[in-house]
Image (cartoon, rainbow over all chains, first blue to last red; front, side, top):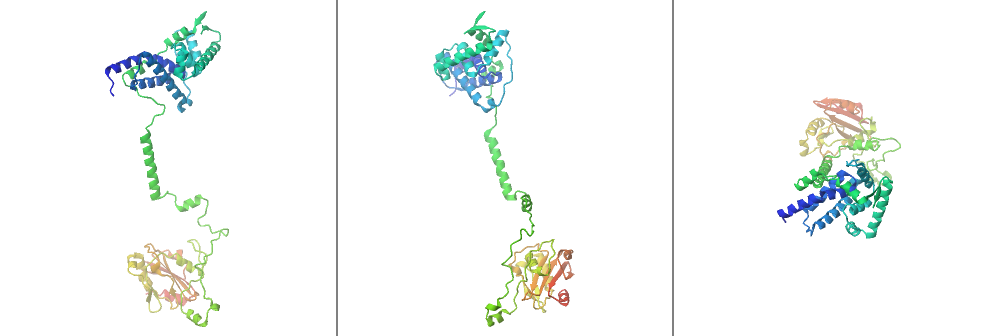
Length: 163
Length: 266
């Protein structure tokens, strides 16, 4: 089935809109820029090829987040990922506080980092996160709580954050 | 100073951007799906299967390149091991069978006294490096390559056996046949070889023929070859050459006069 110019244009628009969102989520989970690029590319190639009908932009966002999580899961389970060590890649931030915060969040486990990222960056509720990740809400709450506690420990009182 | 984690985390992420070049590649349809390991399954395995088939076919047709002798040595087995610890089993079927006189009646005994070719006693098989003794002539017979030749027996030089039409196709046999016809054997010696029953082989050089008396006490071995070093290859009591053919005679129980008569070739 050939796609119309309107559909193609809309997909281009959505790709531009959510490109950074997907990249940030992928980076939060994989903690590696190159892997995040790979995931990002894979997600949007799937989006461009899919014939799925989306009801709204939020629907597209939720689908992209779900596909991003699935792609990173596939990468985690691949033998190639298990046998490689990511290179240390420094991202440059405008302030040392931001750089320090990013480094500490990067140390979280993928489960905790994902929940923290979706909750604080994408403003998703616990129910939405549970639906996207296929978890119980209590599990999401637990991950969120443990992630916060871990972050507090990692930050070590240098900065006083209110969660 | 207390900061809101949500705002701080968002400000951090606002400074994180994906690869713009990748975005443009995706938008322009230029992005290719990347994989850590990428190889074309079908061409690779098709080529591998084809190569395996070729190797298997050529190996089956031409062999593995390791001959039996080499393979035997690789297994630690000496091909010519004739040490006493591993003696060859005695050859019972080829042992000479003497008539059991005690179990025969007088009439049958007389009948059995008729001239008959009996193989001389058999000893261990000879090899090229070993020196045969007098009783080894019968073993030499087993090394005879096929031939379709004619041999003369008796004073009248009547051929004891004629090889037949197909034999004439063998150049060696025809060549030897002319020489063999010129050799006269004593009356009591009969060729033991039924030459026609031996498979044809053009490379029958040297050709060995054994003739024996009925009792097996008198035996002569005639060796024919085009090699001028025949005398160094086989034991001989007399040696002569007829044209390009060399003849060596090894005799047992024959007098020197009889040997000289055999070698008195015209």
